Length: 305
Ligand SMILES: Nc1ncnc2c1ncn2[C@@H]1O[C@H](COP(=O)(O)OP(=O)(O)OP(=O)(O)O)[C@@H](O)[C@H]1O
Ligand SMILES: O=P(O)(O)OC[C@@]1(O)O[C@H](CO)[C@@H](O)[C@@H]1O
Image (tube, rainbow, N blue to C red; front, side, top):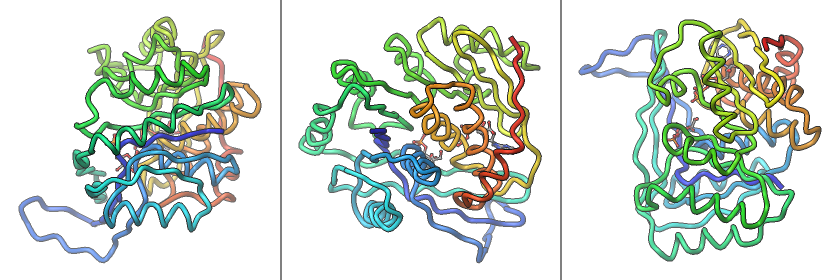
């Protein structure tokens, strides 16, 4: 079973404007509500490509109820821990020039809620894959992912780490199956900046040396690099109309996982990852299956090392 873990889910409120003026009243009729949070987005993409998953995490209040109802209506399995506080609402502003995320810190969690959540990790099986995705509500403490990874390791299950910064680095000694920093996150981790793909290669390889089994460095419209222990591959960016790239990274992770969990072939998994990420970026919400398949045919991958 694939478990997606969203410690800090979000009700995403998308607002689309032609132009946005800060400090002024901006009005729009183009709004959309969506069940979000990185692991939840991953479960949604997994479901779209026919891979079963179970979404775990903390949900509460009317926003949490919306997420539960949404997943239920879309036959996406979930086993959330109910909390008293409210699931956060993140505002996503899109104008012709830019996409801006106004993200909240997240709810306060009680000791009893945390313990209830932790119990779910006592019954993992060896062939389970757990995806840890996104930020952590403050009350859980900075080391919460480390505690969860220790539980996954104890049960000899596999995990994927879709987080950034120090938490990503901290997870590497435990050998995550996949990590997917974007180019800017990689620059921040190694306090450097990249002018071209050549310059990225030693840093992707360094993440392998530090313990990751596979690394995808995503570069939005410029495509992505895949680092495996044998080879480095480049997937060209696919041209198209950018509609909503929020969740494109999560969809990339989901695509890799859906294929890899079946075939154990990282190159095939990379192809599906690119198709899922790109078709998400070119859709207002999740893509249709037909559109995803159309984009899949356009994926162009070459070996670079
Ligand atoms: N403008 C775009 N044009 C084409 N493909 C895109 C575009 N934006 C994203 N993608 C696809 O989605 C993948 C992931 O995008 P990106 O590198 O922006 O990840 P991310 O920063 O983790 O995304 P997010 O945090 O918005 O979910 C890219 O590798 C690419 O395949
Ligand atoms: O604050 P986090 O957990 O890093 O990210 C949360 C979030 O921006 O990620 C998803 C898109 O990737 C959205 O659905 C959600 O609002």
